[in-house]
Length: 371
Image (cartoon, rainbow, N blue to C red; front, side):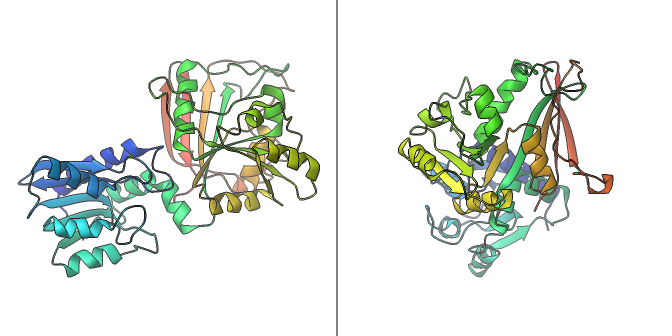
């Protein structure tokens, strides 16, 4: 039976897991703590893709400090793995360190694990308990690993839409001016969102209008990972002089085009280091991204791109930044345009709504589903 104290330690492990956000994709966020007599004697989290898993990170700390884990309890947010990947099975480390009890936040849906890790531990004589699926903690853990859960159980990456608008719902003025709608704090957080996603996506309109770099710039993290840049460009109109092309050798860039696009232009883009995907639809693009190991995409598109993702039911999450400004204008663009949804019953609806302040700006954040 899981106690209130167990939940406290699992929540601490969950806070550790969050430290890996933006560095472990497409692996899950995992934290682990080792406890004896109510005191934490070792802890760890999955810091980066290919590095030690949370359990082995905690044991590495214990080993380096001559801390004995025999008979202790380990709290881990996700079921310990039992297969060889970049790292050996964590179940082996749990057993060899003499852990007597393991409390698991949630089971791992990865077919390579999926209950097998728990079974191995129990066969080794270790008591294993798992948080109930309908408990508040389990729901929070599923939210924390929403990207991994969708990636591992479907053929699509987790797709997040982000936009900034004025209080009257405009993403630019009637003259097209959009820099800057929100303040510095909101714009700084957007770079954190970029870091947390494996890819960033925009349309050809954004490339032609702004010639953006689409990179991550975080003051205290100069080496923060840049997302893979995905450009929706049906007819391959992206100039060879565009920043996303000239810097493709440093930051991976993919241009998604229609099957009948200019093959000569595609060849010239390839020579510049740009990859191209021939896709029939957004769903086709999402499946290709998943096949390439892309677990998450941040969509920073205009109204037409956003409407397409909404209409196709591909958006999983939304960050809507609202600035306390009013610009008006019937011709000023809005965050979601296109043909739109005809019936309110079919509207994209958000759950788990959260609001945050960034300076004078307000952000509404919600998800459409958690797999």
